[in-house]
Image 1 (cartoon, one colour):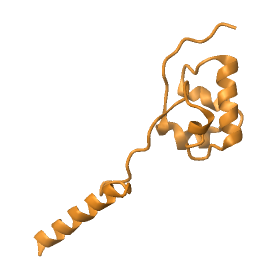
Image 2 (tube, helix red, strand yellow):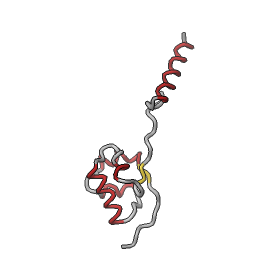
Image 3 (cartoon, rainbow, N blue to C red):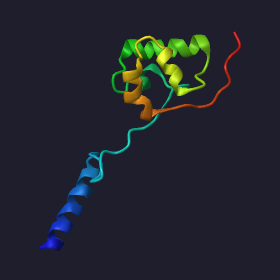
Image 4 (cartoon, one colour):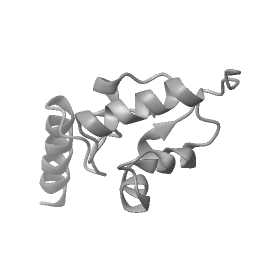
Length: 101
């Protein structure tokens, strides 16, 4: 009986992965979003980020240059600590030098 249960669990795990539902250990890891390169559409894939906030993030980056630290995102209107903490694990940063203005 134990062998049948293990076979069933394995089959379910494989089926979940085939249908994009993740693995038995949890959901698949969501892709990281690069704050210095992401488009507004890519930023909107983050939980809690809509079109207006995504546009503000892009405008902030264009006005001030690339982000040096992920935490700088909280300087964008509409991104508070609660939202930041919700998306922090999904963020990455390509190190680029700030543009001189």
